[in-house]
Length: 198
Ligand SMILES: Cc1cc2nc3c(=O)[nH]c(=O)nc-3n(C[C@H](O)[C@H](O)[C@H](O)COP(=O)(O)O)c2cc1C
Image (cartoon, rainbow, N blue to C red; front, top):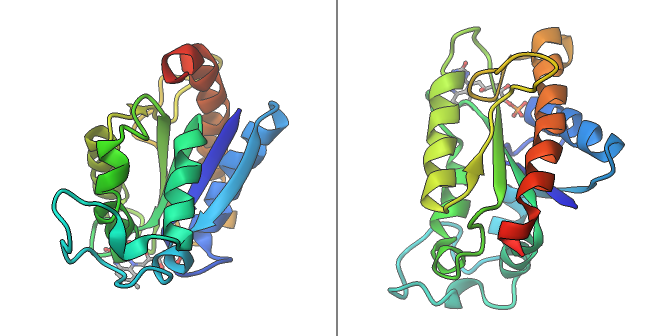
């Protein structure tokens, strides 16, 4: 089972990455293979790092042969994807949005259809838009036909929208607990839905 984390923050050792690692470490402890993609790094390898609609429908020509193309191919193989975004003006980072704007070809191929998805977000403020950011992530997941899970697990409670954290995340014990729950829930739902991906 492969679970991929997408770091939508430009900070490679920041709070978003910390939360992604917390989810993935839990998933790994349950037997999953995990990895993290630095969205900003792979975006930079494309001719333009945001969509200019150079082909319609998207043929993927502006990122052919790049790390971005390899990343989209890798995502097709994932059982689960954890979307990580810092809260920027109450919503997802521009990098993560640009990454998904570039993913129309992947969507046309139904590359993420029935892949399990969860979100982690972090902001400076306690109520700085973590939930609105998760909702924006959920919109992207739904447009790709993904199966969304929140931060609930049968041994705990039903949870809510995903992991919401206030910076610094390594001091946010509630977010850390919810991140571990997401890790367990991902494994549960990835296992139960494996046959509809194959
Ligand atoms: C452009 C920008 C916009 C931001 N907007 C918000 C915001 O609306 N609400 C909030 O709580 N924090 C906001 N922040 C703070 C970041 O969400 C916060 O620093 C976050 O922890 C960054 O995660 P990182 O360490 O993974 O980069 C903003 C930061 C930047 C750079």
